[in-house]
Length: 261
Image 1: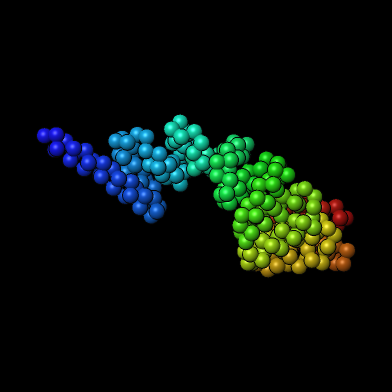
Image 2 (image 1 turned 45 degrees about the horizontal axis):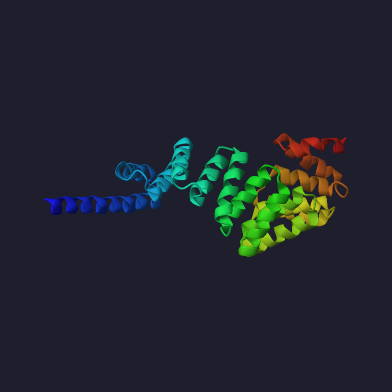
């Protein structure tokens, strides 16, 4: 009888392990509701299984069930107060909820536990940019660059930081690096154009805005900024472009329409 009980316990344990693998497969196949259903059963048997709670939290997050995801992440932190995955997960949820102060706080706590995680450092930098903590963002993005010097995203966000800090030269150089590592990206060309524009290098800025408009003809902010760059040389066309951009909602164009009167 004792041997039978032992066998049944072993069978139950093996079944639970199988359930996690099945849930993980559901998650990989983006079958998030099925993953949650499988994990609910597993956690009914093993309530403190951190990896199962983590996977369920990620599944809720993927379904945009953010409050449920937060509940699971907080449960993990009750069991393991410094768990970097749970802290990072909470940061991601708060980011989606546009609670950027909370996102920054949790990414920072996660980074203290996992300081070599490049993607985590990038997310922390992004949250700091949202909170206008530009110097701190630069510090963490620099650390990320030291760890992964060919990661294009790092240079993109460092470019944004330097633009906000008023260093247009460095911003432009960072966008150059971003373009070099990421290839043809219109957002990078647009932001580099902004940096060149701030430096008074209107010819180079115009080239970048032209490139954006060739790919995205309805990018009215690029159209408006190109118009300002060309105002001295071709005022009639620039004013037509400004009016068109303003008509389609470009606030920059609206703010500069007085140049056409």
